[in-house]
Length: 505
Image (cartoon, rainbow, N blue to C red):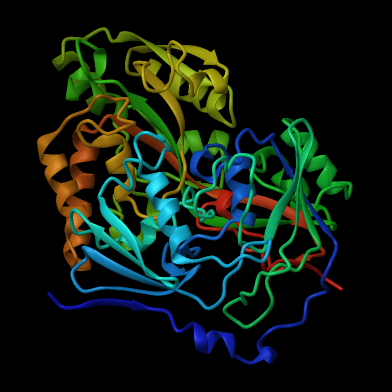
């Protein structure tokens, strides 16, 4: 096999001309409106506040840029001859905020923790393919995988994989990190305060400095409209997850500006298919898909800021991997399929809907659409923290539910986490041998052209008989004060780093 080599020429970037950028005005306190954080252990972060905070403080072995490419992070370069043995070289002299060096041993300890079933992080399944990880020297980390993985560098950038010091006993309380900022104070009812890391020595790709603010404050509030008003009033500098109903006001306000990003954040209706459940019959699943008018839902809930996708987890942002096939809306065919499946008069459907974002709005429109094919949808609102828990009718147990899937660096991650037989988050209890075989090939195929073909075949199967409906893939929508410069959203907005941003002079 032709040797695979991915090498980042950091040295050239480090010496690039300072004329390529305009000098920022350093200093100041950057204030971010966010819901309350619940866990600041990088290995266990799950909700948007946790991920956004951790993204400011911790470095990853590899970073993922806004278009899903792996780029240098702690590692300056990486290479593999066969897709099974991967060697990463750390950049020169990285340091934690206390001045101690970041070495290969810290990387080894972090990944061993992430893949340990006894620790139980959400990344156990993602890193189960690692056979061994070792430090060849202080700056060289070697991963040996059980099976070939052409996308392993991207996996190393997964947001749980923030590098922490070797032997850290309680990462949820001891926040030793090497990013541009570090966590100084955590007030669970109020805010998290981060301050500039005096030992952070990275430059941006254009040679400009990183970490321009003196402090970054995450101010907790469950009231997103209230956060928006605080932004407009000058009490905050950044708010994410902007509600669609205030977008126009922010665009018209001379003191604020929208920041948009393409990501694969999806709103998904999922169906449980095991036992004698309604959705066990693929004709029922196909009927519900055909009865769903994606464009009408988008028009009602998120006009101009979402795309219909193709009802699979692989959305348009993945470009060549995406099967560009608009979902078909055909209520007459949907009714015929239901009759063929034994439901000529339709059926009643119990729909669990967490009280978050646009879920209830989507559910209301979808229920109206389902009524047109004879399906009566009983909407059951459930608190989001209960829906994503072990409580009855949680997202992994209910027959029909709705919720978001956050953006992943590679689309096969959705398959491995939620749709192959026995996957950790396969709440649908779906098992399709043909689909599983394709995913196994995607996981190991080194030739990108062949991976593209495999991805498209897998999406064809998912469209035909998969257990989920991707209602839409949304654009990330955030807003800042107009004096905030050089802020770009991450590949998922919750991975956005404020490292390059600064206040205009």
